[in-house]
Length: 279
Ligand SMILES: [Fe+2]
Image (cartoon, rainbow, N blue to C red; front, side):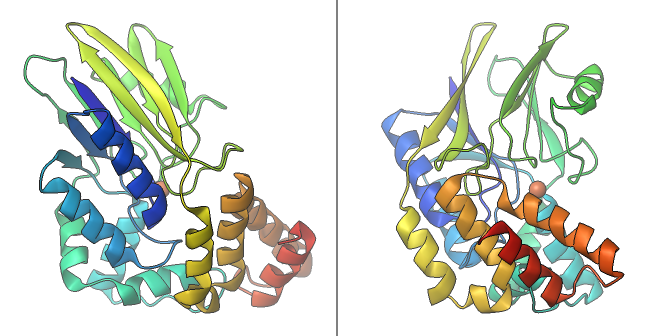
């Protein structure tokens, strides 16, 4: 049995369809989505419709990520996002979603355990078991702390966009990286495929080229760039380089805000950061 794990699509339809082509070609039996389906890239409904369409003849499992929770929160509590580099991408996404999409997000769990046939059960989450915003990485002790609490032999999570495989005490913790916003230096959609055979678990990372040109053009064509200028430019820089430009930009804006005593949402700070980063 083969299962594909797809995390952090972020409305990057072109990257997603490259993954779908691979899944079809390689006879993968099930698909597990780890959340953050939308935001950052344009046309969120196109991505959600592609996911729905693919589920017609594929077996799929879903959980939600923090981006879906932001949309739910805006819907339930009448939260409004502002135009501008800090929140404009969330505003664009919220305005372009349908009520049925948000209701679907609301129906999804934050984490779950899956058992298929006689194979060993495995767990999935976006971040932590209870909090989709928990960042679990191997660069600090978060992966170690997670695996100590891990209740299944295999657990797969996303959110950091940084792929890793971590093994300890007979347990495996896996992050497939990000389908739509990969930041490990390579300009390819990332996912993981795990082969289950008897009591063996064999994970494999997959990286796929996709239509980056169309992905970039659509930031302008859709009008998203006018909602979230610098944020969209960090996304375009990520597409072009595979480097973590949104993280770099946030750090820089935080520093500039601290130095100047101005607010983190101040558009001028974002424009200054973009100039320093050369994006
Ligand atoms: Fe996330």
